Image 1 (cartoon, rainbow, N blue to C red):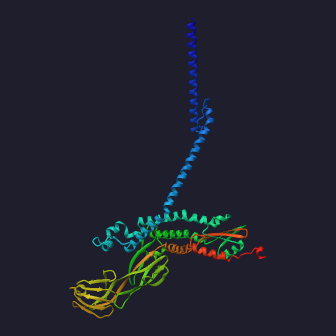
Image 2: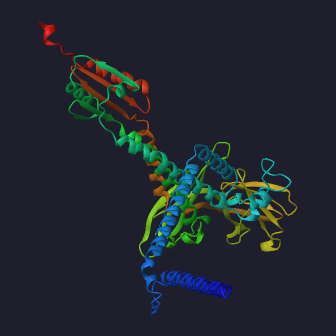
Image 3: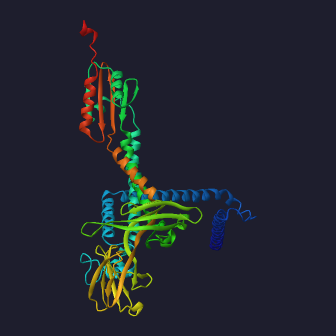
Length: 525
């Protein structure tokens, strides 16, 4: 019986323990479920209104989770911003490298030299003839190399414009990371009250029995801006010398910007106009790039009133001139000027240069015929030009007469066999017999070779060069600073300069030597 009671009691206890364990598991499940509901509620922003009593406690636990997410987002944003600032700083430091700037300038100078010795803007056929593969220029530059590397228009090539952009970025980086901070430091001055700090400067001296006010008067008379407060004094001059490097960089950027606009936004062209004829200005122009915009100036006309050549005694061409008129359809002649090499005509943003000359036609008579024109073709270019024409066989009893000319003064006549017949001056009215006919050369009409440019960036480039020269001169000014401190009857003076330090020390010594000495009353007695 007792054993049965013990067994029964044990079984009862076991059931109680099992029941308590099951209850604990149920409570634990409910706690986990409540926590899950809290998380869902926080993530959904409380949008779902759970009416269960088990979900209500989750409302109070939602804000801490949202706050933690917000804090983490802010922290990530701050870290990202800091990372970008560090990256930008590294890029600016790299771009402001002096070695990089020198390398950029050397490359730009080298490419500019190539563009100077190789003709720019020609058609491919010109390079085929001028730079053949079997005789490359300087042993390197054949037409294949020139066209492949864009050396025929090097100043508008992507790599040249990219170098200019990189140099501009280097100038901006150098200005922002070096020059601007130097100016800020120069302007952020303060009085010095520590004698040891003043005495450590480049030039320093202690003046016994001297007055701070009299030192200030002497400094002001030497061009210094003087500030004083109590027993302290500060003076400076030449702050413009600190600002000048920024101006130099700005001028260079202005020049490069103008060059870019000129390369992509202007017009250029070469035209040949016979004497007595005109040409619409815009008909001879080609756009330089995508920024080129038409101008009303293009509707003006160029009329060649006269073309003539000035020669040396040996017959070589010395100078050639074109008497030009610029006309408008409504207002007539706007400007008339005789131009020559290095003496262009300028009007309304267009510049017309004298660059070349030629022979357009020759006016001849055969026997008693009426005068007629023969077009002259260029046979040889360069300094020793040669032009020629042919009277075809059968024209006015001609049997094939050749006429050659080197200038506008005379012609050389050959018969149908190519044998020399004689020379006649133009307008001499003296006939020459060739193959049984009499030939008279009445006149020869020249043609002028003009180069026309419309460059909207010329004023910008000129302004940039002017600013560059001015700021370069200003940059040689020394920025000098002087501090002084009155200690009893003595003055402690020190100063420094960013350049010409020896001259600054000599100037400061001269000023200090001029400060009058005050004899104490006890010494006077």
